[in-house]
Amino acid sequence: MIVTNKYYLITLGCQMNEHDSEVICALVENMGYIATTMPEEADLIIINTCAVRKKPEDKVASLLGKFASLKTNKPNLIIAVGGCMSQQEDAAKYLKNRFPYLDLIFGTHALPRLPELISEAGNRKETIIDSEESYIDREGLPVAHRGRFKAWLPVIYGCNNYCSYCIVPYVRGRERSRNINDIIVEARKLVARGFIELTLLGQNVNSYGKDLPGQVTFAGLLAELNQIEGLERIRFMTSHPKDLSHDLIETVKNGEKICEHFHLPVQSGSDRILKAMNRRYTREQYLDLINIIKEEIPGVALTSDIIVGFPGESEDDFLATIDLLEKARFDNAFSFLYSPRRNTAAAGFTETLTRKDKEDRLQRLNDVQNRISKEINESLADQIVELLVEGESKGNPEILTGRTRTNKLVHFKNSENLTGKLVQVKITETRTWNLIGELQLKLDNKYV
Ligand code: 5AD
Ligand code: SF4
Image (tube, rainbow, N blue to C red; front, side):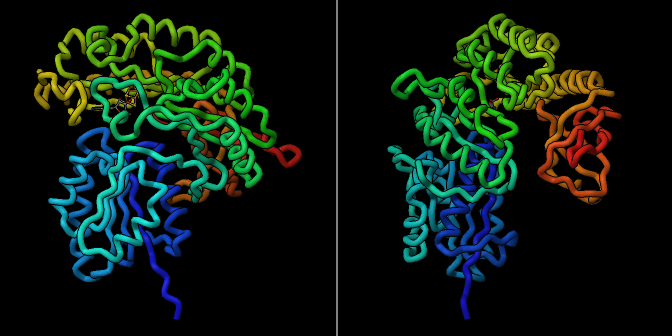
């Protein structure tokens, strides 16, 4: 009888982590493991962690608490914790002390060594920690893409910005751009395999190329990818407002495959707080930038991240953020309570707000943003939009779900499963978080 080992993987955090998990899947599958959705039947459990706020870190502790009993029933079970939390030496040591039954703790830089680390962990009693800070090139690592028509494509790893609240530069290292040819070759291969939408990933995609020889820029990379035949949509995230070039705006405007959407985190609308955050732009510069984007690219969608309750944020600072939301009119904004992160500059700032103060502000901010998102969606009524169909809605296979080029979720009725296809839909109903549409007539086997 052939016994197949099974692995169970949980991913917390951002898109880059989701992509790292696709690499982890491919590496462990190459070792002979097959995926399971049930931790009880796994021989290997991996949690790919996030360290950007306290909440996802707490989640790791609660998951590990649950997995402890599995280890009692199955002594050969390997439990591993990877990702951003494991990359920090102090967090790795804490995990080892609190959960001594852990077999392996591996940081983001350890990905290329993962197969050896897992083999070693299976043979050793004590917890192995690999939070090594030096990184080796991860080019050429296999990827098990989760989707069939949409794929992540990392273009730059790490971050050099050191925003005062942010752990990312400490756990993802300095900026490293991938070689432009490697990216283009990978994109072509993905398209040849049937992928029609690629999302270029980087903590700050605008820095792409700065560390490469020659005149390589992110706009240049996008323009090259725009030439790939068979590719339908190109997305990218995240952009830092301080170095979003005019060239990039022009390239998005002119590149027919490049989706009209910028995720451009502002974090705060107060100059005083922006300075303390080390963001290196003012609210005026930010508003000028988005006004240019809106003028140049009609119908563009803008989304943002906001941190509420940064140390020293006064009521006036907060009102400046609310005022910026009213002026910027984001399609959507992801808002977070400030969460102090060990070893960052802001961890040394004195917190001036109670949790209740922060939560009240978050609620007020969300109320304003929800109204704006709803108003923007209302303006889309009766428009015909292009959708990439992502699948059937849960509970009802006759309702299909897709995304517009501006990344809005649209549901529409159709009995034929059009997953992975581009269709045209007329918006018939609008809501705060999604839209309802009607499939447009089919002509020559194409939905127009
Ligand atoms: N506390 C709260 N939010 C944070 N973010 C990053 N670091 C912190 C922190 N310490 C938010 C920022 C960033 C998003 C990915 O997470 O808004 O853009
Ligand atoms: Fe963190 Fe700032 Fe880098 Fe974004 S740009 S990852 S917020 S340090």
